[in-house]
Length: 291
Image (cartoon, rainbow, N blue to C red; front, side):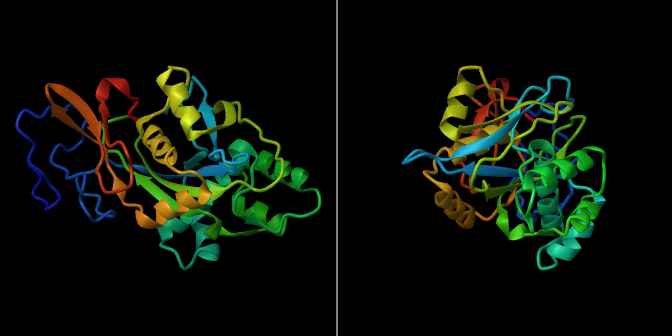
C-alpha cells in the first residue's frame, strides 16, 4: 500500500493487471504536478487543429496515421505532436514567460512538431513573402534536427502561443516501454489552402475528417485510435463549431487524466475520471489500444 495521501483501496473483486505501475495511485488525485505513484513519463504535446466546416457542417480535424513500424501507437490515427525538448523550454522563456514553464514549453513543442509533421504553421507570426518556401525550408531543417529557436531567428519570426488553447492533459500510469505526459491544445486552422506533407519516417498518411466521421471509421475497423485519441474525438464530436470547443475548454480546465482499470460484472474496463468534460469515460479493455 502506498503511504502517500494519493492512494486508494482497490474495490472488492477489482482486477489489477500487472501493467499497472501502482495499483494504489488515486487517478482522481487533485495535485496534477504530484508525481508520487506514477511511472516516469516524457513530456509531450499535441495540437487538435480544427478547420471550419462547409455551411452548417461541423469542423474537420487534422490527423496523422502513424507508420506501422513505429514503437508507439503503430498504425493508429493521432493528432500531430511529439516530445518536448530543451530548446522548447528556451523558447518558452522568451515567448511564454507568463505561463507555467511546463505549459509554455509544451505549446512550443506542439507548434514545432506540427510544422515538422504536417508543414502547417500554427502559432508562428511574421511569415511573409514566399511563405510556402520558408515553411518548407524550416520543415526540412527541423527534420535534420536543427534547433527551432535558430530557425525562428534566421527568418525573423516570432511565436504567438496564445493561438493554442489548453484542452486536456493525459498522463497514463501503465507499465509500458514509453509513457508520455501529453498536453492537448486546440487551434484553428489558418485560412486558405495549405500544402500538407507527411513525414514518411514516422507517418503513413495525414487527412482532414470530422469527429463523427472518425468515430464511424473507428467503429467500422477502418481507423485505429489509442484510448486518449478516441476519448478526445468523442468529446470533439459534441461540438458544432470551433467556438463550442473553446467554451468546453473554458468550462473544464485541463486536469491530469490517468486512465485506470476497473472491474464490473466480471469484465475489465479502461476508465478515466468523470469531471473533465468527456461524454464516455469507460471502455472494455479488450476493445481499445491503451497508448
